[in-house]
Length: 225
Ligand code: CA
Image (cartoon, rainbow, N blue to C red; front, side, top):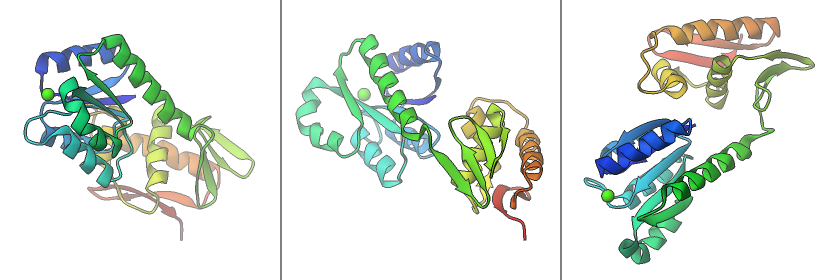
């Protein structure tokens, strides 16, 4: 689970980061609205904790931009009690939950876990389709007809990205960030290794779907001519 914390009180932000890292989340932080929005628009976060009062751009504006760009991350707003009355309408326009400051950390952790479960529930049993193949998102298998092949965790994540963006060039940087996160120091060509594994599996399934490389940019899932 990837979590973004947009909060300008650095001591609170750091405490929350530590807390959620212990809970097993991959956590990034931003200390103002503009940087926070920039991170959020990458679309890689499952959950965003968003403070209302922020420098440069307030939390409500950040939230509106997130939703306007169709980013589906669950958003939990943090708001001071005094702000609640007039902000409530703003919150209704796209926040999934909110918590008033000061809050008990156990309460925040419980809310975030609830949001994470809700997000996961949404695609349990869902299957992605492209050309003659299916991606089983529950069992992480690639299927064609009655044939099925198990994918490793990284292969699955990569295939999911390609299928969600079928016939569109997906940048290699995007894949790396989405799978390994911002702070990873993985080799730039690591994705090529997993792409080659996926190609072998597509070949084994005798699928018409192929992963083409776009030199210097990334990959695109298409059909062989
Ligand atoms: Ca604040």
